Every structure is written in C-alpha cells, then in structure tokens.
Image (cartoon, rainbow, N blue to C red; front, side, top):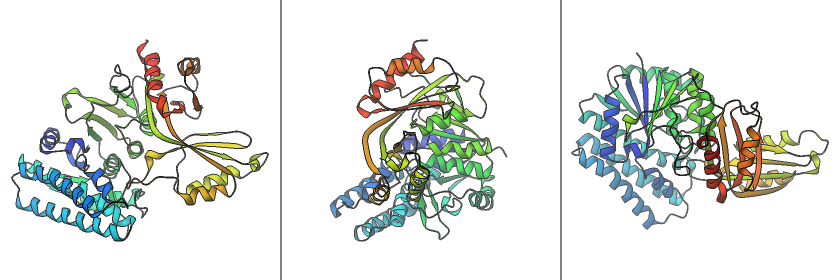
Length: 451
C-alpha cells in the first residue's frame, strides 16, 4: 500500500468551511489514509494563556468560553451528532478541570495534558466531517503510539518505540479507514500526556510517516508552498517548486515558518518526500522537498528568525587553556539548551539561542539556574532584540564572490555576528530586530530580483 500522511495546520481546521476544504483534499487522494491535525486556529494560544500563573478565575472562564465557541460552531454545522457532541463535551469539561487545577498547583505534566486537548477536539471534529462526506473515518488517540520521554513541554520522541507501536496499533486500521489523529502530542512510558513543543504537529506527521514507511508527507497550511522569502517582507518573493532536504532543513532551522525545523529529520532518515501546499488554494500546487533535485542554485532563499538572544561569555581561563568550551556546552546540555551559531576569540565566546524554541507552555530558555551556573566560571552578558537572517543555497562556502555581494548589501546595517563556512548551504548574519525586515528585503532584491 502506497501511504500518504497529510497534516493540516490550525488555519486549515479553523472552522467548518476550512475542514470541508481539507476533507476534499484527503478524499481526492486514495493513498491519503492518515491525517494529522493541529488544534483549530486560536485554540492553542488560548490554552497557553490558561497555563499562565497570572490567570485569574474570570480570565479562565472567559478563555474556556472562547474555546468552546470555536469548537461548538463546527459541531453545530455538523448537526450535533450525539457521539461527537459527547466526546467534545468531555474534552471541554476536562479543560475546565485541568485549568482550575493549575490555579492551585503548578505542574508541567498538567500543562501538557491541558495543551493536548485542542488537538483532541479538532481530530474528533475532522473525522466527523469526513464521515459526513461518506468516508469511513474515525479519530485515533496518537498517545497510543507516539512514545516520548518525560521532558514535559519539549518531549523527545522515542523513534523505535513509535515504529513498533504504530505497526501494531495503527497500520492495521489504515486499509479500511481514513484515520484522523493528533499532532503535537504524545505520551511517556507511564502514560502521561506530553507535548513536542510549539509547532510540533509537522514533526508528529513526519514521525508517523517514518514509522509506517509512508511514500510522502503532505503539509497543508495557508501558503502555497515555500517561498524565496516571506512575501510580506519582499513583495516579489516567489514560490519554489522543488528543493532538496538539505536546503529545506536549513530554511526550517533558520525561520521559514511554513515548515517546523524537526519535520525534515524523519523524512531524511527514510527518504520520504515532503509536499508543502495551501489548503485554501490546493490548485496552485506547492513545494516538493526531495533527496535529489534537478536544479540546485547558489541562492535559493532568504530566511528570517526573529526573537534571538546572543549569549556572550568572557573568561580569561580560555586563554591558552583547555576545557572551557566543553564545560560550557555541558552546562547548556544539562539545561536542554540548543546552540545555533557560535564565534570565539581568545577570551570570549558568543552563542546565539533561539527564543522561539521555548517549550509548549511558552516558557523561555534562559532560566536563572542556568545563568547562575554559567556565571560560576565566566562573566555572562545577554543581548536580546536580535534577529537572524540566513541566506540559503548551495555551494555557498566554495563559490567565489558570495561574500562581496552579501556584504555590499549589508554595508548600511550594523551586523552583530557573521557565520559562514560550517555548511555549504547557508551564510548567517545577526542584526538588530528593528533592521531585520530591511536587511531581508535588500538581500532578496540583490540576490533574486536583480538577475
């Protein structure tokens, strides 16, 4: 069986009309047997607000009401079938219980269970929409197969267990039904609900595709594929028909919001092609991500990632000494911090950290405990308000003239850091967030529009 896994984001399942469009996409492809959905647009943000310590009783009731309105509006359009209404009532009741529990006792495990309920609602509703169109479809609790560790908020998938459980519990269902399941969530060995971090629904789809040896993963969102840059920043940006895994990984890592950074990893491991398209305009096509592509230009795209932090570490112990970097990275690893870019001098190390990679509850990366631990062996300075601009392409490290073209564009701007050479697929610069849009627009005009 040739299997396609389709994932629909929050805007694609925002309401009854959006779900209908997505159902047509699914039913238009006989190979599409597994559907992964996000929470309806706006629901996850409301759930995150419910996890905040500052939330009072009035605010909690207001947000629960808003979530219920979004979900019941879809249920009403379906004619309120009894089984779906009962499932939805149960999930919304559980939201109220968990949000009240958080008010008296903070718990990351409780937060994860609360945050998971948005996807559970949308999967029940989307399966009902498919049934309304005549499909044999049911919702499947992904926690039965998507095993993770117990790092609540940013749980780490256990790939081998996911494969084994998926083949046992999920694969047998796909020959007879279109199965709808949840993105973003999983469970640990003890059966506790976990989340993969914000944006983890793409990752869920790719992990399940890997486990089931699918032929393709389709990521349906609100844009018609991956563009040369954000069209809101450069109006002449255009969609890319086909890119390689390496290019897509760089773009996802450095800010192309249409694709979650982790999505590409399971696809690469199993050589699964990935399609990115618009559920609103599927006729426009989209972008295919493949292992090998026919065209591999030097410049493919410009990506932007806002809300970056620069961590500056100064210590005379670095001078003609060994072990400082090892100790620093060991400290960061203990606190589950991933470093993006790094530059060093004789007595300084500068590291960029992606604040957008905070956990699913929205909590930041730089805890007081981490900063205190680093301060024991160096002077620490934190700079915020920065943005990372990445030029993505091929042979960037070995093509003559690249730096000249880029630096000419950057001349009017203050560049805080430059990283180039570690990968043939990117050249990165760190600039003030206030200048980032101008930098992206200027680079796009020079590299893509002047040819």
